[in-house]
Length: 268
Image (cartoon, rainbow, N blue to C red; front, side, top):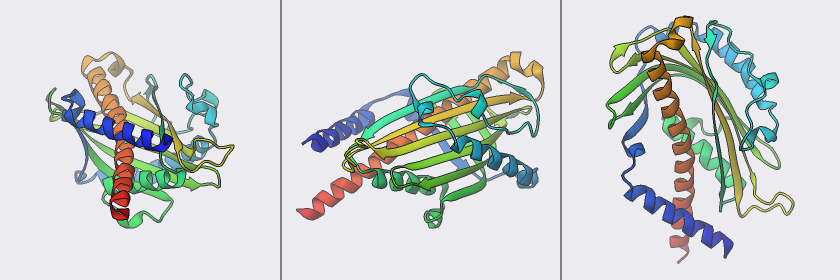
């Protein structure tokens, strides 16, 4: 009965989201082709730094995923000061939700949706993603867009009692409202844990998905920190990243719900 109520709640949430005319409805984040030359830029060195930071991020304790905590400075990534720059303010998003689906099914759905978004469904059996990519973030209502070059490493670890995802990413904007920009890059770190809601009873009927997602801007010129256009770029890009992260988790909910409804229809 409890599971049925949770599924009903998800169905109601989906209906509200589809009927709502919120600003988020006109926001889009999509992968793009990279401009010529970007693939050759210090990619190997960046991946080395991202990998080092990933190892540190994986060691984060679950307490980091609390609603009022930040990633401890002692556990912060060692990367980069590969390119140097003045570190801006770290911004953090916490997302915690309980789903009426088992931890294993939820973890598989999260991983599958990531690969669908990347357009690489054939790699779903692997536990590591290493990639360069282009990404466009657009808000049609505000008529604002940012196009960036990115590199990221994503690690999946399936443990007996939980599934852990960690990733480090480097993002460098080069177009803001169709004008060239430079001198700013962003580092992303995320630590996501999926485990049974009731660990003591080994409950596989429902699961808890908790994530801590941090984005930090770096300025190659300290003067950019007080530049209004640079501030607008940071605000827009960070907002788009947070929106995309929550949307990813929402889509995982939808994917699991569709699977449950399809299974139910086949059993009739």
